[in-house]
Image 1 (spheres, one colour):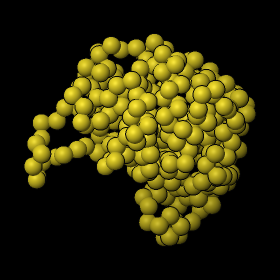
Image 2: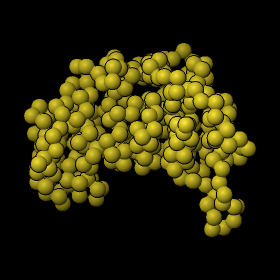
Image 3: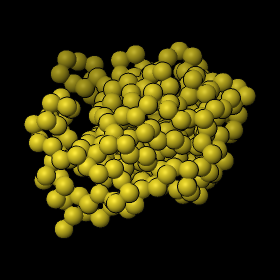
Image 4: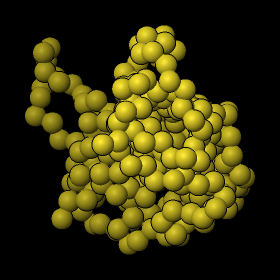
Length: 281
């Protein structure tokens, strides 16, 4: 039996989860300058893979322009009547189109998702709100994995710099296995200024850094509204971002500083540990 897909609707016709459809974007800096998020990825982009495409088809906020499918994919996925009719192609054509990516026989060209401004999300967050901030993490596989983590641990928003983030399509959407449709992503102009704004709104901002003595468990023990900031592998947090945190914390590791032992963790693995610690009872 083909998978049943909910009928997609225009993003202008009703929100999801009670959030406003008047979408704007926090551009960073004090004063909370906002503007519409429409087209913030520079236009439509392709997403591929079974989970990513089925989730997009089920998302009433998605506008879908084109659908490409193999016969095998068309046999298992029911496309809604008001979606664009799929173009049936040979698997080899999709291999060439998407450079050998694991497309699983389905790909769609979609308009970018639009989410409420960060300050609107803050207003709806509960007493145990949780936000994940990425400082110049550009690898789509890591960002896709962290979108999946955000869904698993109930993160209220994923925050990234608009100029230093991968497109929210392609490999990012594939690795996120559909979670890109439900996790609000806020693109900001200045990460450091955004952290200062979060502090003013009474969120505790914790940056991950290996050289500090404060353990992650100690840093997050007070509970309340928490912001976790992850830096890029290698350089870590930039200096001003580091200085804009309330505290820096480390993940305790038992490996030593010798050849053959782990000197650091993949950033998505570190994010998983941090989010688990933040949610741990």
